[in-house]
Length: 87
Figure 1 (cartoon, helix red, strand yellow):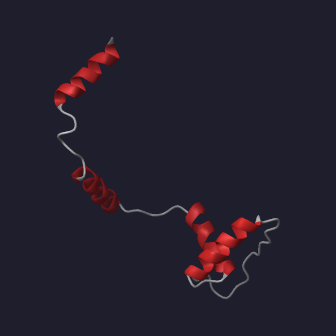
Figure 2 (cartoon, helix red, strand yellow; figure 1 turned 120 degrees about the horizontal axis):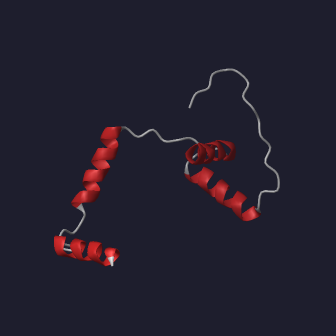
């Protein structure tokens, strides 16, 4: 993500548990990023909403539907569950 040549806010993080810092450092190395860049990436992934188009949602729904075993449940099982809920 390119933000231009202006000053951006800075953040100092204190009291990071050593195990967390080590995981961050390992992830940064694995992704060929600085620790700072890896931390920004992690924050973006957690805090910024991911834009997914309706066509992507539909594609994923179709993929999930394709994986459903239609022999697993039938209309009689559904009707039985409905009737149980009514008693």
